Image (cartoon, rainbow, N blue to C red; front, side, top):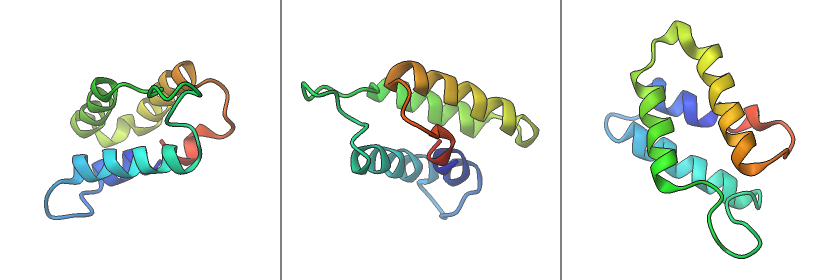
Length: 88
């Protein structure tokens, strides 16, 4: 929910998408999810940009569907890592 809520709730006067993406990457990194064992990123920068923009452009009533779509995308990239909804 982190990526979604910071992007959509306009918690800051400017830079909500950038801040949300940065927080999302920080969370993935702190939980040892951001990088493969070989050091390459599990999620490409362009993928994160697309996800963040998709959230920003979505309607509020699409939240549940959108979170599920992002959940599925991240699970396919990262693999099964527990409750992904905690940080989407």
